[in-house]
Length: 202
Image 1 (cartoon, rainbow, N blue to C red):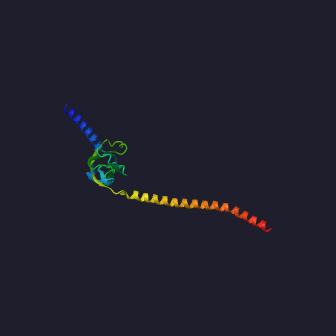
Image 2: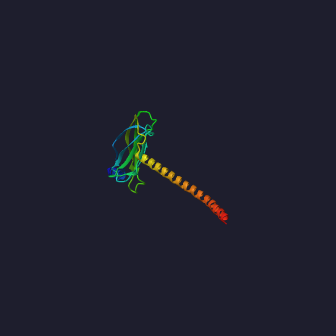
Image 3: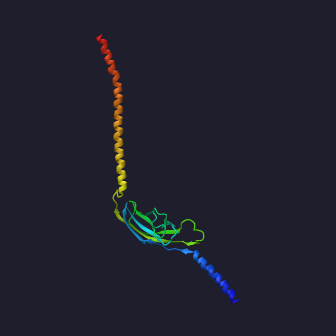
């Protein structure tokens, strides 16, 4: 009887050990854990944070912005995955309209990670998890300069120059056309005068 119990326990132990080896858990973290913004009305500010993991398998991630700040915060990232030794970098932009009222907003951006693609055969399941970064946004009573965005100012300047040059070109082209028409209409009159003077001489 004891031999049978030992045999069953041994089989269960081998099964549990094999199952434990197939399950791989990983840890993730965010740095910094908090981002604070202080922006004037009509202005914006950008900061970044990184999502890192100890997983050797690339992990895809998605970002969720809490409702309390989703109208004031936008996120951008070129990275699609995070992997051990290569954290993903996320850019956070906080902005406020010129009609915004002074306020202090508090919320979180949550990064949810999952294995990239399907797990390889025999690798078992991977426990997914997430990490949250706290976001603090202060909208001040000040107003940002009208052209805070330098790229926008440069673009508008180039457009203005193109419009001015295009107007000058069209104006000169129109004048040349008018002169051309006037020259064509004067040539027959001169020819008529010459014919008349020739008849009188005869």
